[in-house]
Amino acid sequence: MRILAIETSCDETSIAVLESKNDGSFNLLSNIVSSQIKIHAPYGGVVPMLAKREHQRNLLPILKKSLQESKLLKISNFPASPAGGQFLISKQTSNSKTLNLKLKNLKTILDREPELLKKLLPFLKKYQKPNIDLIAVTNGPGLEPALWVGVNFAKALGYFWNLPVMPINHVEGHIIANWLPQPENKIPPTLPLKREELDSSPSFLKEGWGGFPSSVHFPAICLVVSGGHTQLVLMKKLGQYKILGETRDDAAGEAFDKLAKMLNLGYPGGPIISQIAAKLESKIRNSKSPPAPPKGGGLPPFREGWGGFSPIVKLPRPMLNTKDYDFSFSGLKTAALYFVKTLSPAQLKKLTPAICVEFQQAAIDVLVSKTIRAAKEFGARTILLSGGVAANDLLRETLKRTTYSLSEVEGSKINFSVPPKEFCTDNAAMIALTAAMKAVSLFIKGGLRGISKNEIPPRLLASLKLWRSGPFTKGGAKYNWQKIRVDSNLRLA
Ligand code: KG4
Ligand code: ZN
Image (tube, rainbow, N blue to C red; front, side):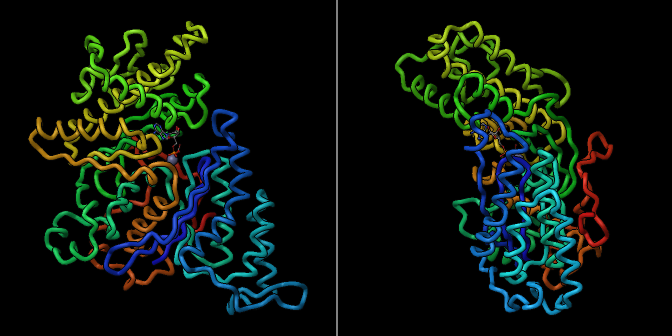
């Protein structure tokens, strides 16, 4: 089964092709991510209408490159028909009436993306329908104008090539990125199986298992932190989620971006702030007489004596001790703003690295503390970290170390997993893999056209039976992400 995935929820245009094989393993044939950072940088944040324009410009060239990389781009055998400049797409649609109708409908589907339509028509004329079984597309949450470009593009391709289109939740995609291949892992990983199946199938382990996914046992606590979302999710099994808490205002990444804007550091703020902080931290670490630790710092064990080292810059840890699992990063940002306002330009320049260290530490303290508390309360066997902010080295390291030290204290082994950095920030590979897992499960329920049973490994069928295609739930109530209706053939309506 081959899946083409499209991701346009924010400022990255990305297309991936994933091939899942009969032995349960999968290959990522292509994953192209085109970032719009330069376009949005002057504004210090993503401008939705600019993002929409860039997605329109980028989608077709990226699709072409992605299919090329996957060796699925083939020139059409059916040349343009001499009559009326129409062209033939396949034997089934050679009827020119049908064709005209198809083209007319394409214009309707891409009514709001005229620039994309202009590029798409000659592409469809020139190339054959690729050997793909399913199109997956992010349909939220995200920036609405940006999302619509991807969704309409997916609808147009699905309609023209007669392929099912599967909407995928972006946050779920971030979580599932934990099953994508690790860079050091040359063997392609397999889709996850139940522990019992793993134990009883050593040969399967040897053949296709990359070693990594076997470390994810359920229940798992997932911390999803990005520019748009900050959520703590309880994952009972594959496809079963419950949101335990989320940010009440800014997302963690958004707070990093806003602080960077405040300090005139550029966009996106996360990577810049963490680089500046790391420089100062290593300088202090290497100095002969490191400063004394702050009183009652509440820092994770391995950072004792280092975190919050500056007595001049002290920021709050909002909602650190509240009983719920919610977060608030707007307060942290505002506290930083008030502090910055008291500084002269020269002082600000001097203290910028210390502000970065303290801000990063404050955010991490809250994120790690609540994640660990949730892991304890729900008896988690794995902690999963994901989303753009999961690319932050200190967060990765702190959560990993704290998870392992918790394992020692609690006496039960809790695993920690975080995707490689390239799969933390937005990418279509995670959307493709989520769709692959869902496709198998939907197939089991008899809902997916175009995929034959012998293409799906029996062990996967068994292990993924419980996948729920429904949206996330919060406190048991339905949490409705899906703004776009899907018909019985999984086409977006
Ligand atoms: O997941 P993502 O690419 O997009 C959304 O779904 O929002 O996340 C982007 C966010 C940005 O806010 C960026 O500042 C943040 O991730 N980010 C980081 C780091 N790298 C990216 N935040 C902190 N430290 C980093 N190293
Ligand atoms: Zn994201």
